Every structure is written in structure tokens, then in C-alpha cells.
Length: 298
Length: 111
View 1 (cartoon, rainbow over the protein chains, first blue to last red):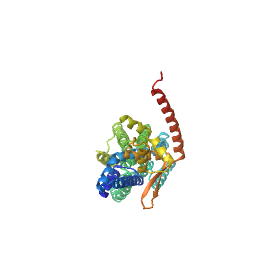
View 2: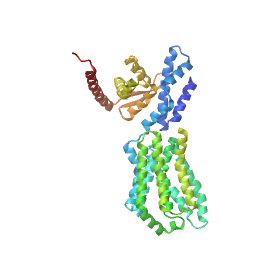
View 3: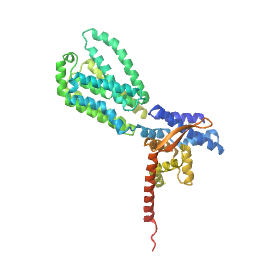
């Protein structure tokens, strides 16, 4: 009896990708339900095994219950959806108002992002946290790119020290996020391919150091940058508001990839080796959780 | 049979709210109570009960609280909230009107 009920509950838990405390609570409820029913059937003269089998049968497919529970809990409110999309809107606003050139403004937004990310992390990682967390990781990665552009020789030394530290921080946050739900890791990393796409198509290597060229290009591309971040915000709202998991995957995975493709096609800039590597890394990091989830669903 | 299932599906929330409003109760007791009160007419699919309870809880119509029984077992009892009572009252009134209207239409004509 214990084995078949444990097996049933393990199947249920494996299929339910929500907050662990809620998941364990529902599993406990199902467990007491199965115990109550089994006990009642045993009183009617059935063997323990037979009683457990019938009790499990009456509850039905654990995967189906998990899916229905997921749809109940996975849909965030409009408030959560808006707050999740807010960092994308802030970036769009920054470029729409041309305040991205203002160091004070940039610092304020960066401080706000980091503070909100830290606050959310210590408040039980609510769903709105993950897009903020994505931007929280950006300075870490951008510093890495800047280090690669140091004078000959120094870049490599800095990279050798920096990359393991950055990867450690990156993987730690990814793991903590994916533990809650794989899709949240992708939600967190959704801006990454878009930001790198823009970053690298605006200029590479020495062009970046000659900031005038880079700034001039950024100025002309600002309206398109605004549009791409508004599209990201819309994708995030869709992700939070949609109930079925497969629709969440579609809403999350398609927009960043389409935006990145359009950026690359429209800019017609040759991306160098490091650029390609960084872009591939960001795409890989973003797409892997979705791919794992899609495989698990099949 | 499908028609009954559809009717039950459309009224699950009201039935659950109604049972929970009488006294705080838990999942398995709800299934038994529903079956008993309807003289076995409502054969509730047990697996669909918990998603429905959680949906009502998310809508703040009921509230679940864990309680430890004397034998040490944990049970989650559901209580109706004030908002739940208001929604139930509205639904019951609507159901009464609907039921009266349907009965008036389908009753045989007296010649």
C-alpha cells in the first residue's frame, strides 16, 4: 500500500512545477485522501493492496491533477504580470527618452533593479522576481565583455580570473531559479539574447572602445531598441497571464528569438568570434530550460 | 450522462461553497457528503476536487488551514470566507431564478 501510494505521489510531485511548499501541501492533501479512502475500503473487507489500488484509481491520473493544479497556481495576476514586465518597460523608457546617455539615470535604474532583485530573492522568490533577476545578472556579463576589450594580453588574464567567478554566480542563480521551475530560468534570461544582439551589432572590439562610433549607432537604433524591449515586456505579460504550460513556453520562447533574428538581419554587421560565442552562450542559456521542459512533456 | 456531467461541472464551485459554508470540512469528507446528500446522484471525480478547491482558495472564496488530529495526522480543513459567502448568496439566488424559470417552461400545460 505504502509503495503504490508513494509511487503515485512521486509521479504527482514530478509533474507539478510550482512553488515547492504549495506542491508538498497538495501532495499531503492527496496522501490523507488516499489514506482515508483506503481505510474505509479496508473496513469493508478489502485487502490493503486492493484498497490502495481502488483509492488511487478513484483519484485518477496524477499527471492530470498536477496539470489542473498547475493551471490554478501558474496564472499570475495582472499586477504580477505588470511588475514582471516593468524592467523591460524601464529599459524601453530609458531609450525612448534618450536618458540612457545620462549616467545618473542609468545608475538609478541599475540600483533600483539590483535592490528589487535582492528584495524579491529574500521574499521567497515570487514570480515577478525573475525578469528583474535577469537584469541583475547583466552587469556581471557586460563587465566580462568589457574585460575582453582590454589591451593585448591583459584581456586574457582578466578573463581567466573573471570567467570562473562570473560563471559561478551565474550558475548558482540559474540553479536556484530552475529548482523552482525550469521556465523561470528562461524567463530570467529572456532579455539576454536581445541585449547581446544589440550590443554586438552596434559595434565590436575596438569600435566599442571608440565610444563615439558606438554611441552614434546606438542613437540611430534607439527606436528599434525601444520596440524590441516593449515586445519582451508583452511576452512576459503573456507568460505570466497564460494558464496552460505549453502556451507559456510558446509565449516565452518565440519573441526573443524573433527579435534577435530581426536585429541580426537588419544590422548587417559582421559579428566577430567572441561576439558569436557570447551570442551562442546567451541563446543556449535561454533555450536550454525550454528545451528540457519540452522534452520532459513529450 | 454527459449532460449531468456538464451540469455538475458548471455548478461545482457553488456546490463546494455550499458544503463548506455549513461547516469547515476537508477533501474526502466533501466527496462523501456530496454523494450522501445527493443520494448517490453526484459521483464526483475525486481527482478534480483538489484543483477546484485550490481555485476557490486562489479567488479568496475559501481558506485552507492545516489541523493536527489527535492521532497526529495532518488534515487541511477549508473554511468559507466573507467574500465566499457573498458569492454563494448571489449564485444561490441566480440558481433559484434559473430553476424556477426552467420549471415554468418545461412543466406540462394544463388544458
